[in-house]
Length: 131
Image (tube, rainbow, N blue to C red; front, side, top):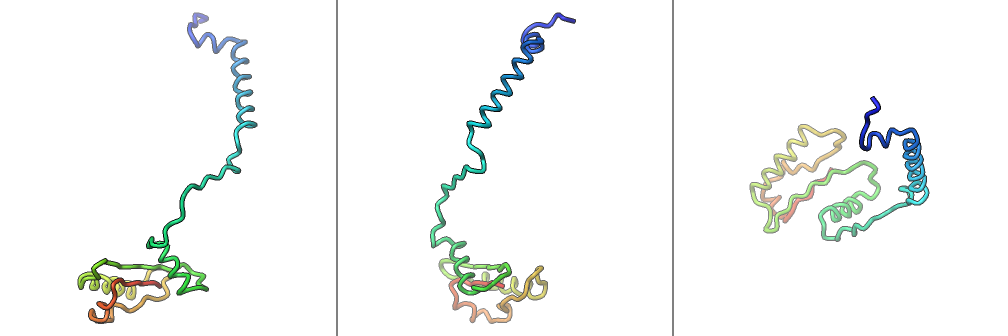
């Protein structure tokens, strides 16, 4: 059974297995003392979002309209550069009607856009819906 050859014989030798263990312990100790701790390493190279981004505009709108709001607000924005089409407005009305008849959890209100005629909704280039 002692016919081992190669690395198996070298690693399982009574002396070298202790040498390998000692090397691992020294390496772990060196890494522990020389490597910077993870908690002190902070890298944030992400630039802030531009003011023209929709998420930044939505956040500013929520802060302006609801400065004392403690609850989470839902903000839906429909926008088309050339203006919303009649089909878009009908989909928005269907959406608000569905929210009125089947409210989502924690929903407190929804603007009644589904009760407005399409002509009244056409004056908007985009529609904001928040509740």
